[in-house]
Length: 238
Image 1 (tube, rainbow, N blue to C red):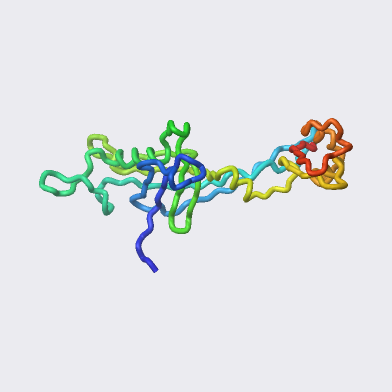
Image 2: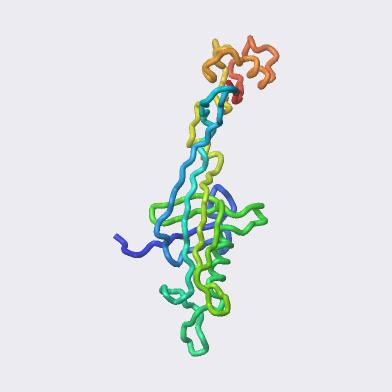
């Protein structure tokens, strides 16, 4: 079992598919100091449905929102931490970087935040730390500068960042495997099928056959062609 310390690494990609050949050049950042921990947030969104004149309301499920993860990163060039002095004077003695924490922060921003013209948005990211593999985009970040040299150069800063999970659409749909009537379904007509029967199977209500017929441009919904593929769109039952 390896005892080597694994540090948080963030890798930037051009695509939400995270293909190996879509990695961005110079699109990696490894932290100097691991965070003390991280927070993962899970949210469910509901639609408010309250009838006029009533005191209570029924919450109707809308969607499961993407997961968030909050991390705080320390940037330090005070010399208090190993590896923080990288510049050398003429005698070869390590000394403080004249730019303080700015170069490291700029590299961090370049990886996670900067707009990429080739994809018309900031990059897609993978955060890796031990067993954590989080595919995401940066939602927001703030920088708290804490210590300064006499000339005002910051030499210690803490970056709080919130990342939101993302996943390519095909994989998202495949994972969900939805059977809900609130999403579009496709049915292949079999012998004996009628449009009201298929509507009952999808919506648990045969009365939506006219909407389905219109959505599929059916001129004669009473006579369905065996083998035909029909779309059953989301229908608001409210």
